[in-house]
Amino acid sequence: RQHLPPLRGAQPADLTPPMNNSSSRGMLVMASSSILFSAMAIVIPFTRGVSTPIIVSARFVTGIAVILALGGIGLTRLKPVNLAWLVVRGVIGAISVYFFFRGIAKLGLGRGTVLNYTYPIFAALLAPLVVKEKLSWDVLAAALVSFTGIWLVLNPGSLTSVGVEDLFGLLGGVLSGGAVVAIKKLRETDSPS
Image 1 (cartoon, rainbow, N blue to C red):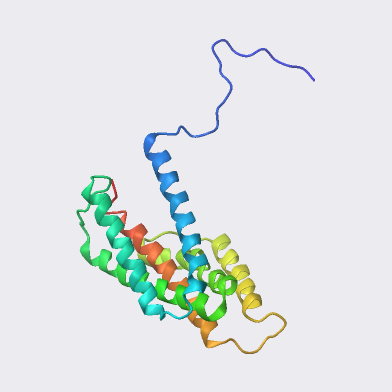
Image 2: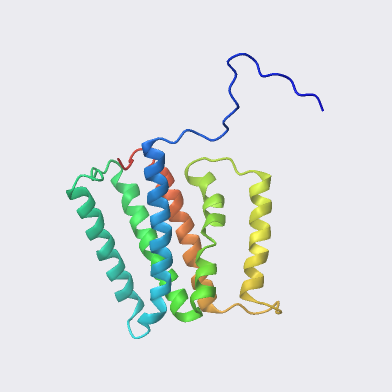
């Protein structure tokens, strides 16, 4: 095998994107969010004696307190532009969290979480309607395969009934997908900074 000498002044190609402060901060926020959502899901089964609406309310009061504290110390901007979409996102998010918590309480941690974490499928299917993203054939194929997997989770070894609580858990995934699309819509006008 023949090796050619490098061109004068040529440097090896670095294919990794440059990291700036905003990218690092975004990755840290996303990683922290994932860890906190996982911790939240793990804690839910220990709240058996408490009603789901109370748990959801406590979660939102805590979230609002954290956001107000971050805004108060200047780490985030609290100046909404598109109030209608913020309300839509909040309502959809609240209902989806209710069904997420209910799914874990009624179906168990594994099954409830799996059903709620179907949200990327529904976000991909809803995005063309709200933010005018193109719906490609590969997304449709992935959705079909995913729905097959969901069916297998809901009915292992059976092709008949699906329980009401399973449907509520899946509805949580649909609504979480809607919340993700609402956030994407809000990026057009409202941006955290």
